[in-house]
Length: 458
Image 1 (cartoon, rainbow, N blue to C red):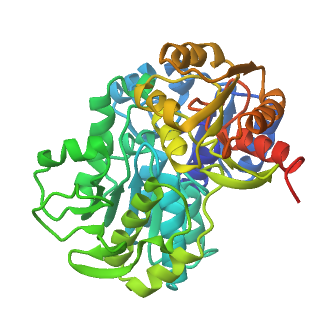
Image 2 (tube, rainbow, N blue to C red):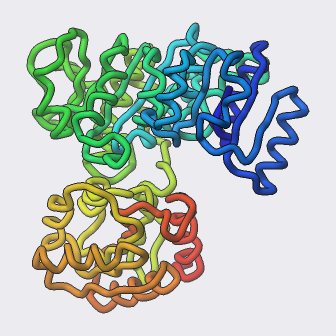
């Protein structure tokens, strides 16, 4: 049984059906788009039940015959109905687990972290492909894991040399058997606490993936990961650091040396400015990718060449051009305070900042500390504008803080403010989720790009 008709659920259903299983999909919705999707899956001999809430009664007709229940990442792992299903003796697992069973003869690179994992996933896939390796990416980005597995199973995609899998905490906790050949942990800051409850629980889920990896690659520049570096009982850790944060013991780390070269221990590999993306966080991403690519057998010269032609990932400090000679950046993926702080540190100051949306739990302190040195003015929009304004004003920021209802009104205000205060950049870095006004951060970033494209310099 599969719960949910989203990308993960439908992918898992199709994969399991192709493997010879009888599959039943339960979906709580019943809108026309879902009916169309259900009709297509029924043509593949998959049973679909629409309008089924996530309650034990919905499963009743199949409880005695079902072997397992596969859930999508959006369903809480401790949902009462899942607990009841386990009590009935059913195995409950995530879509990522189904994909792992289908692809376990191919080496995986599992990438996780609060921030940075999508950029690392795209960059690593680019580096491996540049070296001539078949290394598709999937998971929390692009294809679902099950969709990729189905393509490989059906022969519509060549058998990969590596699978580059971005894994969220939701996906990891529901697929504890996933043991990647290489694991990468980018960062850890408080996020998704409404789901996991505590930072300790969230950290434990992320760390579990790295504990199970044959080769764990860790970012020593991340304060939380570095603070807990002494708690690893296993050997073979690969550390990276832009500074001097790598633990001394163990395998020589990947660092940036005093001459500005990426180095492995004392061995220089290539100039650190090979990656043409702004910000210290992107240097950390580059080092994580370098460590993983070296472990995958890619030469330093090939890594350098691939880095030099990487153009970045949309919505992550994406340069949109200039308006009145002022550069504009789309950082819509900055959905929490920590990611937004990275954005403020990465673009030319003073910044006119666009922020707002649906606020999240977390420590706003490090973000607010940057306002005095980095921010010339702020334009707030969306549901959380009032809450953010209180935080900013309480922190003592003396510059202008302007409220607008939405991006349509906020963007022209920000561009006008940038001219008035002689800003050196305009940055959309919301520090909030997008769900008050958009289906996702991509839609928010796309809207921002459209607004800027209409007025930017030729």
